[in-house]
Amino acid sequence: MEDKWRVVAVTAVAPIAWGATYVVTRHLLPSDAPLWGAALRALPAGLLLWALARRRPRGAWWGKAPLLGMLNFGAFFVLVYVAAQLLPSSIAASIMAMAPLALAGLAWPLLAQRPTVRWAIGAAVGLAGVVLVVGLGAGSLSPAGVAASVIALLSSSLGAILTTRWRDETPLLATTSWQLTAGGVALVVIAGVVEGPPPRVDAAGVAAYAGVAVIATALAFVCWFTGLRHLSAGTVGLIGLLNPVTGVLLGVAVGGESLALPQLLGILLVIAAIAVANTARGRGRTQPPPGRPRLITTAASPSPSSR
Image (cartoon, rainbow, N blue to C red; front, top):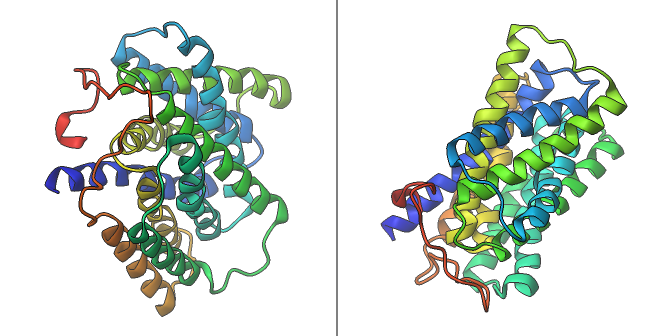
């Protein structure tokens, strides 16, 4: 159980970092260059991880990496960037909190991971918490922003499930770096054609881009994929509910957004949901899909204590 909670803690780094990106993007990055915003997030992160992994794709990964790169990073980052500019931080983050349903729904047919009763209870409690978190003072919402968030959710969920289904003995650091690099290269080309030269930003903007690339991308996605390798997809999705909690708290602290008592209750329900889902006996590790080999941890993967 202790090892499981270590994996949960590592996985939680991802949604917390992602929740913070909504505020950073909204207040520190240019709103008129979403393609460059996504490219400058993905490519530096991919190159950083590739330098650490020191391994090139082999065999089928030459085809899998670009596809996963577009699902997990290319299309996803553009849509999230657009949503962050069109929606309040709490709303944009909370739409992505539907990840437990999307991940569990896709994991059932693709990974043979059937949702448990305990997971369903946790999902119900967590989603109720999300409703409380964002159910007050939302005001009018941009339909384009909502659509961008929903499509981003579906794209990233499918990418996460396929990343888990196609896993092998290849180190996690390497597969993550290939996906980020492939998605980033595609984004740079598209951004150059559609938006022209990269946007000019001040020192705060440069620091914001660097933080998003290193912390909210390179580190966060390694933590996220670590969770997907060792926990069920539905459980990882529930941990993702920390995304809107972070978005709301930072929106209050930095963006001047309001926080009411029901929202505080909602945050407590989200935390309770994660606890409920992760106290099930014998559910600490995800079994590989039928016909798939078990992961063999290598020196290039995150440390055993984080697995």
